[in-house]
Image 1 (tube, rainbow, N blue to C red):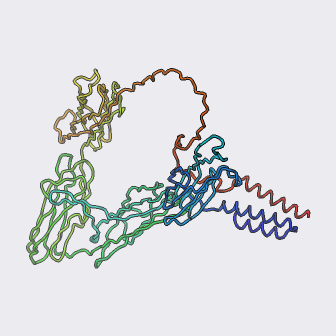
Image 2 (cartoon, rainbow, N blue to C red; image 1 turned 90 degrees about the vertical axis):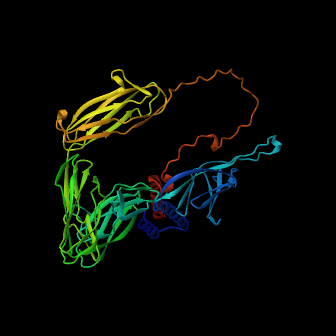
Image 3 (cartoon, one colour; image 1 turned 30 degrees about the horizontal axis):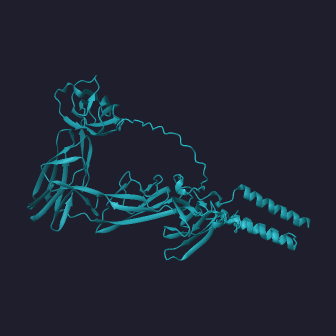
Length: 574
C-alpha cells in the first residue's frame, strides 16, 4: 500500500460522520495501516554470509564492528508473550549502546542497515528451583543467534594497456607501451571485478574514446552476471593511433553498470591516457618483408630494409624488431646497432621457425629504428601463412581415483589442428606398478592412425591396478608424418602428451562391532538434562532472504480492507 492510497483513506474518514468513540477506532486502524505499510515499503536487503553463535548470560561476540551481548533472559511469564525471551544488546566499536531488544525465537533485528540478527533458538527455565525442594541444579540459559551482513555488489572496472612480448638478449620480456606512433595499433584491456558480497546482474560495459577504432572492434559489451568476489574475463579492444602534428594525449574511459537482485543500480568507471606522437621525418626509411608462405618444419625469412635518404652520415642507429606469438627467431636477438652513410641502404635478414600452422600478422610499427634526433618504423603490415599438420595428444584415466584390484581405463586422444593430413604413429606404455590387460602384449600400446585436418582419434586400453598409493603414468608419445607411407615426408613432428598422477586406495573392509552383553536398565531417578546447541547437530547455514514476515501477505491486507469497510459502514448507520 503506497502513501497516496493511505492519504485517500484518511481523507475519506474525515468526510464520514463519526462519534468520539468511533474516532479512536479510526486512529487504531490508521496505526495498523502505517505499521503494515512501513514494513511493505521497507528497504529490501539481500542478507548473505550467515554465521551462528551461541551466547549464555553476559557472553558476547563481534561481527562487522558490532558487539552483540546476551544481557538477560526471561522465563517466568512476567513479560507478556515472553516465555522464553532473551534481552539482546548491541554496541559499537567504542562500546556505545546502539540498540536493546527483548526477543523471542525467529525475531530479528537490523542494525544500521548493515547487520541482521535472527534468534534461531533459545532456552530459559521458568520457576525458582531452590534447596527446599531437595535439588541443586544449575539452570543453563542460552540463545543461538544467526548473523548476516548486508550483501551488495561493488563493481570495479580497470583499464590497462596490452603487454607486448619483445625478444631481447636471448629472452622474451613483457613491455607495456603507453606511447604510440601515428598509424600504430593500440590494444587496450578492460577488466570488470565485483568486489561486493552479492551478485552483480544485468552488467553492461561502455567504452568511450576519441581514438578511431580498429576495424571489427566495438565499444559496448554485455557480460554475464558476475558473482561476488570474482573477475570477468579481460576484454581487449583495439584502437588506431591517428595522425597528429605534435605529441597528443588521448583519454580512454570505461563505465560498468549493473544492479542487484532487487533492481538497485550500481556503477563504476575508470580512465587512462595514451600518448600519440607524430610520424618522423624521412631521413631514414624502413621497410619490412616476410616470406609469403612456408610449410611446417621450414623456416621463414624476415628482411628489414633501412635507407638513409639524407646527405649526412647517421651514427648510433638502433634497430629492433618484434615477432608475433608462435614464431621463434633462429640465431639472432632481434636487435642491431650500426652507422648509415649518406644515401646508404642496408638490409638485414634473419629466419624464424613457426611453432604450429596458421596465419601470423606482423603489424605496422613492429620494427623500429631510433637514431639521434628521430626514429622510423615500418608503415605497412606483413603476413606469413604456415601450412602443415599439427597434432596434440591428450591422455586421461577413468576412474581417476581407483581402488586396488580395479581395472583402470586409459585413453589417449590425438587431434590434428593443422590444415594437412597427418600420419600419427602412437606409442604408450604403463607404469612399473601396473600391468596391461592380457590382450595387449609387452606392456605397450602401439597404433598408427590417419588424421585429416580437424579430425581426432582415440586409443583406449585397461591397466590392472596391483598396488595402492600414488603413481605417475608416463606420457604417451607420437611421431607425426605428413605423407602417406612415409614417402618423401617434408615434416616430422615429435609430440608428447600429459602424464597422469593416479591415487590408488585400499578396498574398504567393514569392521563388525563386538557383541556386548545386554546391561540392565538402571531405575534410579536421574534429573533430565536439557539439550544445548552443542548436543544437537546444526544444519549447514545458507544465505537465505530476511524472514518472510518483513512484509505483510495477502491475508493482512484483506483484513485491513475489511476493517476499513466495516468502520465506514457503521459510521453511516450512526
